[in-house]
Amino acid sequence: MSVLGSARRLVGQLLFERRYGVRTAELVKLERFGLAGNERVYYVPANWTTLRKTLKRGEVGPDDVFIDFGAGMGRMVLEATRLPFKRVIGVELSAELHQISRENLIKTTVRRRCGDVELVCSDVLDYDIPDDVSVVFFNNPFRGSVFESVIKRLLESVDAAPRLVRVIYYNPAEAPFLESTGRFRLVGTYRQSWRSRGEGPFGITHVYEITP
Ligand SMILES: C[S@@+](CC[C@H](N)C(=O)[O-])C[C@H]1O[C@@H](n2cnc3c(N)ncnc32)[C@H](O)[C@@H]1O
Image 1 (cartoon, rainbow, N blue to C red):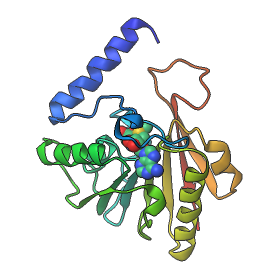
Image 2 (tube, rainbow, N blue to C red):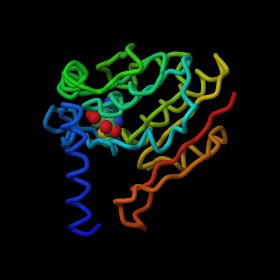
Image 3 (cartoon, helix red, strand yellow):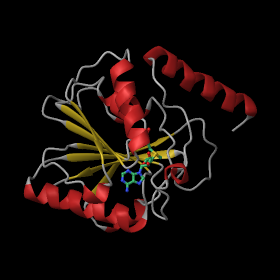
Image 4 (cartoon, rainbow, N blue to C red):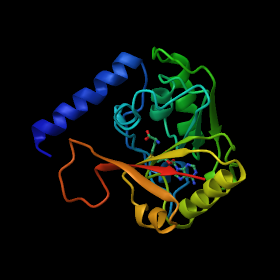
């Protein structure tokens, strides 16, 4: 990306921060909290417009439940509350990032269409996936066996309570594993316009459907 392109993107993201009165635009390494692990990815937020681009009008209804695995400072949780979800959940490992997401939720000026928000501070490995979750968001939060465990439990949840689940996977580093299960149907691919081409999974978002 050109210098001008980077500057434009940064200004665009900061305008969202100002408009919503929140703090989410940072890169934070987990070493800072003593939580670094091979399969855990640091905090960096997804683009503010990701949900608007990947969820089409009318796709979210009053029975839908959104979850962000690795919610960080809560940017995508806040974005999801602008849509008519029944419930919005964010699960985050770091207590510090979780606390910032709580503060963002209190002080934001975002006009919410969903008032039922659960911010959970937990390792995803210790978190039970609710059987009504229907929109799952990953911004490349963890890799390898951690990701595989979450996917396995997500599929078990769909088998226990059959329903359509959409998975929005931003920077889909583990897409080959996901697709190897044979249970995820790719229904859309979106390129983040500010990223240059040819960077592997980085700079794209995949949308999948899991059908019972
Ligand atoms: C790339 S950031 C994504 C933040 C947020 N989803 C967004 O897009 O704005 C990945 C997040 O996953 C969290 N994370 C990493 N491993 C985790 C784990 N095992 N359980 C819960 N959260 C985890 C990190 O702390 C970090 O905040």
